Amino acid sequence: MAARFAIKPTLRAKGQSEARAAGVLLMAGSVFVLLSVVLPHPEGSDTGDLIATGVAMAALGVLAFGASPRVPLLLTHGLIALTAALTGLLIYESAIAAGQYGSIWVWATLIVAYYFPRRVAAAHVAWILVVYAVALAVVPNTAGYSPVTRWLFTGISLCVVMTFTSYIVARRARADRRARSFFDLSQDMLCTLDSSGRIVEVNDAWEAHLGYAPEELQGRHLIDLTHEDDRERAVAEAALVFEGKPSAGLENRVWAKDGSLHWLRSSAALAVEEDMLYARATDVTELKRVEDEREELLGQVAEMARSDALTGLPNRRALADGMPREMARARRAGSDLCLAVVDIDRFKVFNDTHGHLAGDRLLRECAIAWDGVVRGEDLLVRFGGEEFLVVLPDCALDEAAEIVERLRAATPGGQTCSAGVTVWDGVEDFDAMVARADSALYMAKAGGRDCLVQAPLVES
Image (cartoon, rainbow, N blue to C red; front, side, top):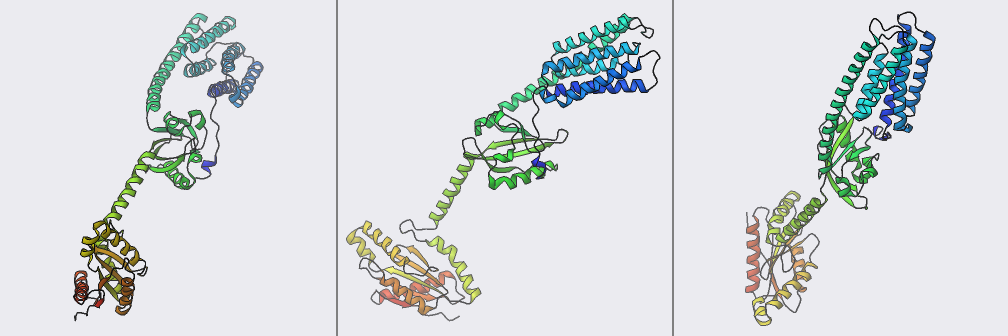
């Protein structure tokens, strides 16, 4: 696939196809001459002159085909007119107007009717009929028909071929114009790519969204516009499409002309008979920005739902989410899990004396001071009001008591606090464990406050 995308074809210049067609017409005419000389044919023809004319047609055809990118359109008209004249010369050299070389004129009529406007095609047909009239005037043998009859039959045949071909081409041109209107009016970014991934055609939406004019994109590899980190996915998606598999859709970043990055959501389909890829892309940069903001906002909301608005500590919801995991971990590891309930002493009196704002400030200061004392793996939670809870995983009861004592000593503002601590028995649920720690806190309060009480284990 990488090799396929390394091909660098050149987009055809205007008039190149017409020049190639003229070259093919001359070469086909020379082959026709060769066949007429090799196969059985009427006597009286000048074989040497026929061969010379055929060689000249072949040489001109090869030159026209090979130099088609540089052949101007006017010279292409001249080549077709010359082919018509050489065909008249072939009739003269064959010494009989039996119609075998007239097929070259039919091919020429098809070409001019396909590539050129009807009036131009009619001028070429008129020139062919003039040449045929001259040939009929100088050729002695018209195979039993009068020159006028042959000229009329040929003229009618060529006019019918020209008319029908021009009609079909005109209908297709109208359909192409309608398709082009939809192509240009689409708000989606539409483009066609050749088999090497080069852009053949884009609509105006590319300039509206990315700033590139259509002529700036024609001939460029689309992968060159893609962000480096997204190229592998883009090539893989293109490979699937070229294998005939349906496009699953792709979101990748591309560089705009001003250097900014845009998110494009694209899909593609392969036209096998043309070996072309038809792609559609939608600029979803703004949608991506909104989605990112939404995700960020949801994350903030989720964080707010799990944290206390006043102190910034985890709240009871975070505790309810995390405690089952800590219990499961302690059970698997066979380690201790301790829990302490801490309460600021006489907080109501402090609030009544200093005001609620001062009380809120004290709660925040306690949260900051205590959070700096506990271990990194410990969880300090505001449980409600002036009550806090500390989860101490992989910690024996004596060690937990030491940590809580350090926490009490760090209480700011000259305040004191009381605490109750317990160790999980490996069986009880979370509510039962909190209830035991809370009972120990009640005993500390009843015992005069500013102390720590360890809750006794409950026998299983």
